[in-house]
Image (cartoon, rainbow, N blue to C red; front, side, top):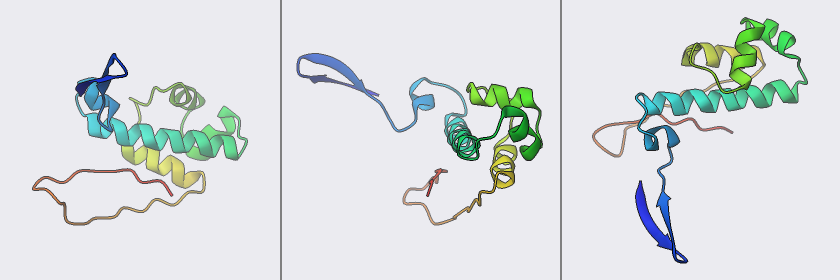
Length: 111
């Protein structure tokens, strides 16, 4: 993060990853998982599912759905979250390409 003065107010300019800005370990993984949870939440709402119905469709417990909808996804892997989206009727495409820098990174792109 960098500090900048805008209209006389000091503000911090953040990166595109709030988890990294907060100094959390595994920030890129957390960003991907949170993006998947956002898409799962949108799907549940679009399909007008109860938590129990969503849990049944996704193959997880209602308590995990409840936690997920409240932002607690620490007990779910990226793979499990992708599986949940698949079970809600969504396709997931993984695209691999050469990186512009010597070290590549993972991005969640939503269509």
